[in-house]
Image (cartoon, rainbow, N blue to C red; front, top):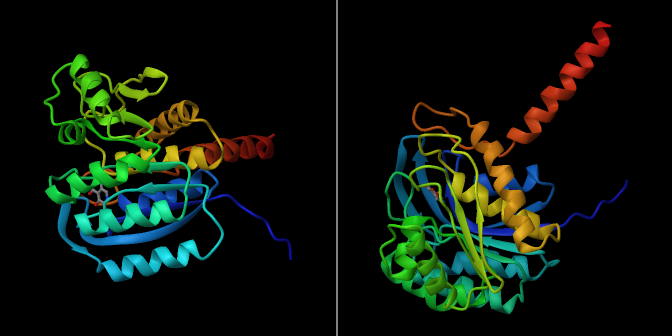
Length: 281
Ligand code: PXL
């Protein structure tokens, strides 16, 4: 039997029973991008494509046990955090990430679900700023999360830059303010020690697609796992999230979900049609 080693990435996040966001979206993204996903579940949410009905934050002891098991085995090349729930979990995760001497730490500072349910307490946000950001490589807030992390209202492009500069002062390696909620085209703004870079694209959907934040940050983590430098990883992930939005699916009767396997389905369809064509000749 042949044994194949594969690069691994760890996601620390909540479970989305509907399958469109959280741990489920992260794992699909990792597999689609050719990295092995490991998980630490922080919270169990009951939800469908209409929204989040309830959340249950797991006891700290159970989160810690999952993390111990991960630390006792081969090292992951990157780690991504999503829904953390409360300040106790944020503190524990920050301590364990430090202990594990991880590199490539991507923090998606999930505070609200797309349907408006609170997924991280106010004290949790404070703890995230104080303990998790100083050890992270990248934080990927949307506009609302960037306002909470920076403490300023964001109305203009200049405000976004100012907010990114304030968040960078927390000690995080880089800040990527995502532009999905901007009017007009979704411009993402990256600020790191080298300065600002804007990643532009056309608007691919007029409505909110469930799971885009999770899939985007998971794709960045996957690219870093493969060894890409940050700006290259963001660029690649931006192209990938575009495909996932274009290939969005109606998995339920509510909102559409981003489809992490959209690229693979498209490639499969292409090779199937070449195969059909060859057979027809
Ligand atoms: O999209 C943010 C998010 C992250 N994680 C979980 C979620 C959501 C949004 O609903 O449910 C578990």
